[in-house]
Length: 492
Image (cartoon, rainbow, N blue to C red; front, top):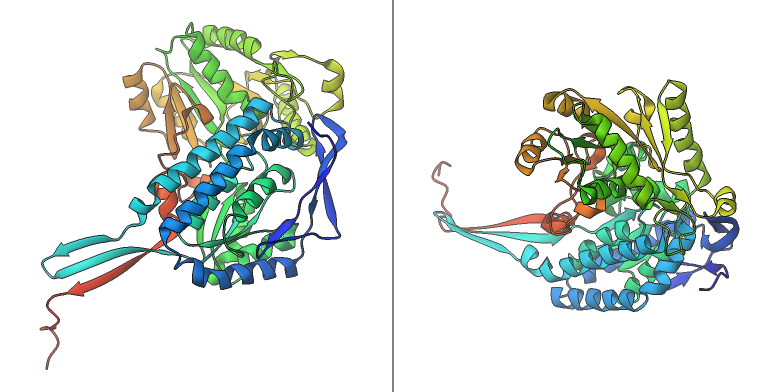
């Protein structure tokens, strides 16, 4: 594994574009190590990329779908061939354990292959014969898509947009997060090289780049994954030109543990622990608050801590014994710690979990020992806000109705989970306000790319994955072919 800093470039019209100004990206496990440098593009660079994508759209939309699929399959193979190198780079710049980085790439490839396998069927014309002739429902490409992606799962949350957009005949300008730009840029470069120049472009940068990507009149659709507050600014920026939008935003996902949950089921308890602390808790769809029926609360807490202590091993992402790496950046560490401190200051009990494998390394990097918070109040910030870090509150509830009320007491509604006897859990799940509810599993463990994913309330709009995730990059074009062309209700 090379530890020499790498430099990545923007991609505009099929050519790499290096800027004088570069932004360093540090290794969260070893903050004194610079993993690489990303360019800082200007508004002018962004306009150029959008203009190129707009010009290219005219020809790309007419390219036969078989060719689009063939090019995407070629890109998939290139990513597979380079997976070890990409995974290592992702772990170095992000901090997630190597197995987690490999898993992210695996999910990305799974989705890209699903999109390739299903796009022809999803986008084929739907022809309806009826009593007044025939109607054709065609699926047209939208135009230029601007994609703005986050740092927590940079590869999967980019390919979730790139694959359907390009397969449907759109062109794209993508902007990765500056907090994890390196590995995803390698992936985007591999994909872009398999397509005609201008189909897939990539820029990096600061606020002015984001503003241009969301306000430029040549951009027809915005695909954004990130924070709810940022999304509000994006919606305002896009309002003047009424753009299509898919927004996958914040979540404060509730896990409800029912009275008939078996606290002695070690495998189920391990799934729940993983759903809290995978990627050091930095996943939008992770279980961020646990509600437990008061009749089993004490037993549950005891067994949960036992399971967490078995699974959680904090340390260097490249240590095969490690399950939880560092937090991605110092700002996030301070934010998560402030939530823990606030809860403790209000009388909650904070229990440290797992084992730190290397104390010296732990003190040098952006590490946090995972914690569970007991005795917090429903209105405490650690319960109300999205922690996005390795801590989780556990609260008791009185009955199912009370649990549903607590779970729905949030501005968010991305995913949720219910744990207990299947029939009972399904019944409770029907009353939860969320885009997805998982039964006896949660987070990435319960994700299935064949089905739509997205949130309700302030967790976003639109859906990704599944057939809906492909259709999100199309407009329905209705072509009417009436048999009776006379209009008897209009006077001669």
